[in-house]
Amino acid sequence: MLTKSFTLLFYLKKRSNYLKGKLPIYMRVTVDGKRMEIATKRECEPAKWNSSAGRVSGS
Image 1 (cartoon, rainbow, N blue to C red):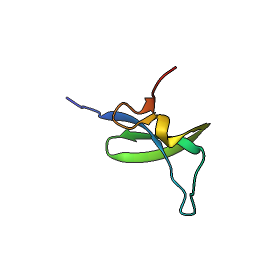
Image 2: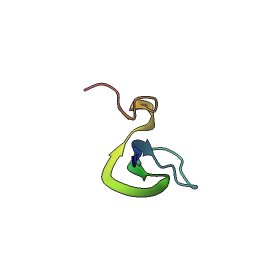
Image 3: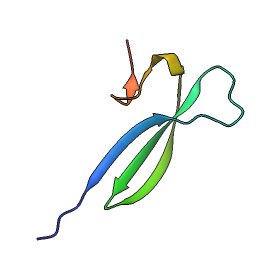
């Protein structure tokens, strides 16, 4: 039987020259160990980002 693995991860991508402000939200899709990153064209303040849940905290 053939099995496939699939994972979705949302994270903030920090630039090397980052000082403060909003960061872009990226989505990483992994299928059978092969990764692909996609920009969601949305931004978030790092203080409001819940990295364990992979989403923004609050409303």
